[in-house]
Image (cartoon, rainbow, N blue to C red):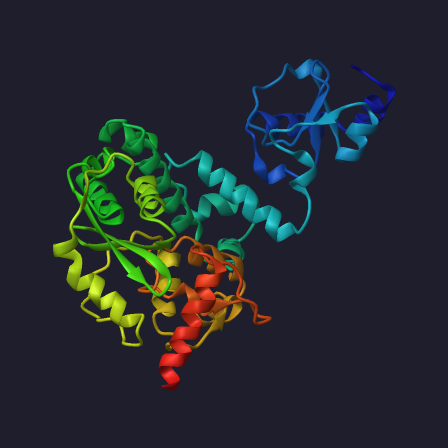
Length: 364
């Protein structure tokens, strides 16, 4: 589909410029997203440079400065890479591009210097911009991506060796130990949904409805609320789909009683063991949440400022949303800046009830 508009869009563009753009397409260079789009005459579709789709033949490719020019030439936007969303805030575009690059190079030891050269930013400015947006460094983000990929590979039943390599890890014993500590168990145990490390659980009636407490050998890994026992069990199955789950009311009774006493106004015992699987950023957020006084609240932005990441409000909200250990990590004490409750994993009504009980117990 060679049109006059396509010719005019590339007319005046030097061969060197076109060559550079084609090279960016070949390398799927996300740093050029938002700077131009390329269209394929054989498909009638235009894409951003980093589009993961199979490369077209060079003679079928045309370049346009904007998506509007491509559409005027008769092309339609790719549904896979969504080139119209490549613009926007330059810092947001930069951070997204860095994230995509890190995700595609998890098997490489990408340094801050490498990113600096690739994206044309000083190492200090790049790291500061990235951390301000996400609350973690590029290295911590890449580590988190590797861990998430490793968990998916292991849950899919892949061998530990294959899962480590596919996630971008080497098979060294040092990395094996590191992943074991982050998983809460060894990779081979996690591989079959912790089948070699039984997960015990118990139920209890609480002021917030039915409560489930689940634990590994290291401590409590899940505290959930729901309307039925069946619904509660689904939460445990989601994380460890093939686990040897076993109800153990007797062994978990002390921990259950501790939590029920808390719901009656007493403090949670510091001896209560928690098996927390989290990124470095999540740990910082959750640690701060445990310092918020009973009955008090903080806004998401206040939490972000308190941990030294004032622009990471959304990341704080995500950390609260992914908290699986309700009450012990009191994410219910974080509300919106306008005083509204905001979201809560176990329902806004339970969040309101928890805060009301805490305030009543503090005042009494």
